[in-house]
Structures are given as structure tokens and as C-alpha cells.
Image (cartoon, rainbow, N blue to C red; front, side, top):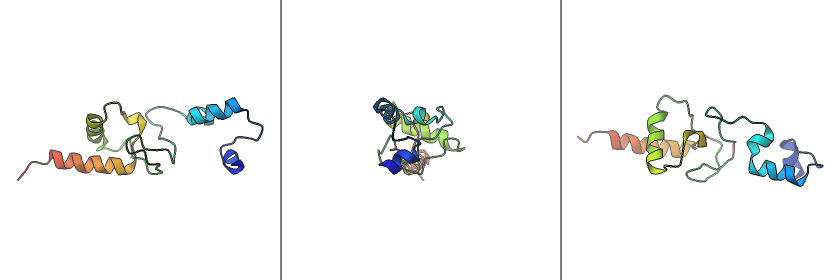
Length: 104
């Protein structure tokens, strides 16, 4: 546990309220910016599949907006600022491509 706290820059003398603030909002407590350009923290769970991931989808990819629209059709409360793991992004990309391809 001490190693984890050292990695986060938290000393042994950190107060309980400070640790609660870190748990409730690691971005703010660690001084990491918010906004559309901010990626979710590495190892955080994907908001869709809930699996921890270190591979987040590139929110600025040229083909991303149609995928985001497909995700929002299924998950109306989701937004690009929430992030999306690479696996969920790929699954929605495959699903979107399959739906938008005309039948032969």
C-alpha cells in the first residue's frame, strides 16, 4: 500500500479527507486536467463494459464520430468525454459497419 501511495505522490502523513478526495476524484486530486481532450486514467474501467483498460479509444480519430453516435444510440447517457475502451470501440465499429453496409 505504501508503494501505491508513493506512486501517487501521497505521503504517509496524508489526512483521511485528502485520501477520500483522491478516491472520489483522482483527476482533481492528482492535478490532471478535465475536458474533451483528457483521456481516462490508465487502468480505469470502461464506462460500457466496466473492464479496467489501459487501451482507450482515440477520441480524435477521423472515423470516431459515427461510432460515438452508435454508442449513444445504445447508451444515451454516454458521451465522448466519458471515454471508451479500444475493445468496445472496435465492437461498435464492426457493428456500425455491418448495419450501414447495403445488402447484396
